[in-house]
Image 1 (tube, rainbow, N blue to C red):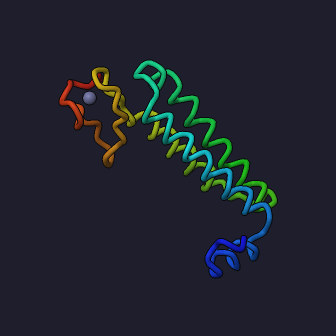
Image 2: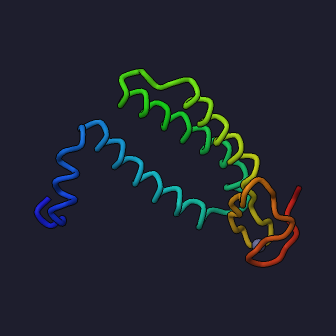
Length: 121
Ligand SMILES: [Zn+2]
């Protein structure tokens, strides 16, 4: 911890241990998923995306339950379920270049912003 800026080091040691674990896992998961969505093939991304999103949602709720000692409100669970559903529904993958097209609001673009190929509806 000596190499970190003092402010960050103090912030880190003041955190509850469970939150520090959550934070570390979340950063590692974000990096891993970032690599996956950048490098994986169109077919792989298309078939694994729903399972990954559901897994991330369950993991997030499990961590939240653990940190809050089982006092996560119902609306929070419903919000996570809704976000997961919308993410699965609105995220698209380009069949030509394999780009991951994240939702922009609630609309699904018709064409790939990277290569211009028509996207499946
Ligand atoms: Zn494309």
